[in-house]
Image 1 (cartoon, rainbow, N blue to C red):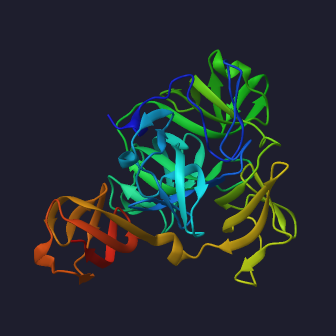
Image 2: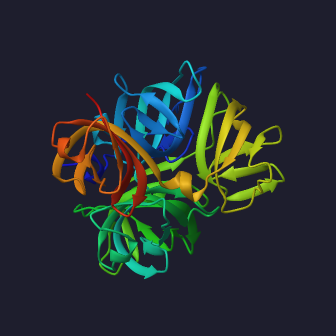
Length: 375
């Protein structure tokens, strides 16, 4: 069974964003990457393999400890579009690093209840898709339908955490529901994204808590019996070292001071790319800098364009080969029928051949523009 389809244990740890997290019921404070050290911490959607690529940094993952949804996993279990938190060290150049720990968590799982243009509703959460969303099990967002059970990886896109931008959507068989958001309390009932939370674990939550819960959704879809809950707290004030994060601006505090989910960014001294960049709610950015008293002091702030969001690079062995228009590399289906091929021809392609592919996301397919056969 794939580790991202397994129901989480009560002692697993949530890493939606760079923060210290409290495991409800256990009362354990967990130090997140970047705290108490001088290494680096990167968070963003995975855009490549060979080394794990996050925020254009190629992390050597040979000796990295990997967890997917709180379970021990291998680097080979990771997929394009999953949002990863990487703890490690910067390499000899800014685009290289060595990963010591990689954590991946889905933000939602359940049955689609409603569809609208470019988005769908899942456990009360609004999940937005775009050209940067990778799909698995369906060819595109157009094939989603009410009743489909999906898992979602993505970035928080609103201050109340009801809206998320999906970086990956996969069809899954598991029946456990997963939901992320801010807890509300009305007439003594605890609600998450409009769904009533029930069960002993739900009783530990307070209004305003940002959480990720797992459990069983009622047949009517209006209540969720909580099996496990993870409370996201504020970033520890001892955070040190470098930070590089991808996210959506959820609120603007001042002209160059804003929130990306639970991450506070001070870009007052940052170089902007482009220089005309406007920091507005909903903007998708990449911030690079250092941690100071729990705040990411950005030295560089870059807007993510549609082109950069769709670009993928994978260096790996062909796992399955049907034709040049249909083969699988690192779990990703590829179409290289229009690619420029170097160090060989299409006739040389087969399972077991190591290749380096570059291309763009197109639903559940990587449309390869460049393919290099490695000899």
